[in-house]
Amino acid sequence: MEIIKKYSFRFLYTILGILLSILLITILYNFNIISSNTYHVLKLITLLFNILISGLILGKKATKKGYLEGIKLGAFIIVLFSLLTILIEQKLQLKLLLYDLIILTTAILGGMIGINKK
Image 1 (cartoon, rainbow, N blue to C red):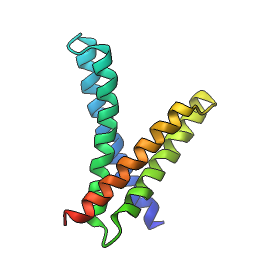
Image 2: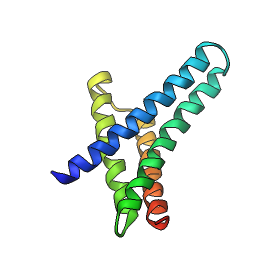
Image 3: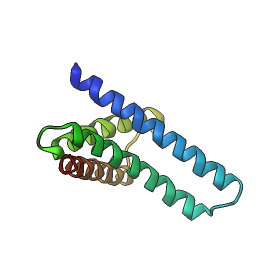
Image 4: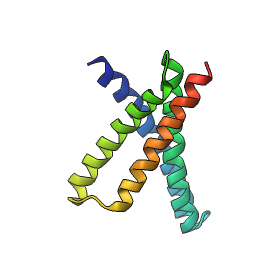
């Protein structure tokens, strides 16, 4: 139960960071300050940056094997995003599986960097 609590709080902080960042990017896009292509790239970068920071924080708190913390965080995020996708779209696409792989890799990288930054 402690593990679920630990990762759900980190997930909530990650989602909050993503939502605030996306809100700012969307406001810039709506006022035609950034182009459509820039908007889509910034959305992906924002998602990955927030996951990297969360992995970094979990890695710093780990005593050993930061990559395992990254795998746990990435898997938690992927499962929740996949459930939301299935509920909304009723199907999974190959493109979404590629995003999931990128998310997992970013979380692992964050955990590995975090364990080394103690």
